[in-house]
Length: 251
Image (cartoon, rainbow, N blue to C red; front, top):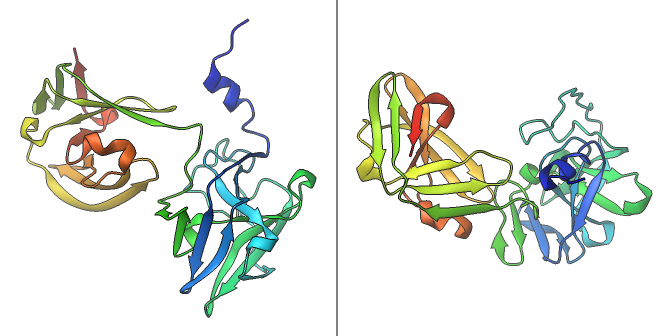
């Protein structure tokens, strides 16, 4: 009997999961380096789909004190990054983090799991900066089982909205990301729609910082990575449209 790999990984989503990393991990808060570890692990609480960093107590210089913050409840089947860190689904103790004259409320969580004794989990967004070795970490820790691949293609891609042509290209770059649908990045010269810049910005640890574009009343219908991270340099400056919101034809 065969098993699809992605399904096998998802079967363990309800469990507390971790994976050691060989990378040196550091975090800054209030102008200070508050943790510096060569023993970090990537940790997924039950139902979490992206990891956070956990490190041993001995590698933390910030003051960790019991938090009075009220826990957040969530019955969502999957906990995406938009669901607060305080929505813990494993046993443990929330902690405030104090350093450099600043306090980050409930930004740490001391795990009660016997296999992870002595490890403390940290909220990525609560800190001023994170580094893997000497490279900044962006948006959230990278999942070692998640990857991005780009491939130049000669497929004919046509994008329409309510019968109006937005783009037509025979030189797209296709982006394949684990667990997600294919995205089609098109040269700007092949986009005929009048794109209006949006103030919306998002971040991805694999691709970088994205800016968004609107077409008429359709807000944030397209996006671009002007300065993508190394895994996605091939899509620099190219335009992608939401497959779900346009009519996308691919030969």
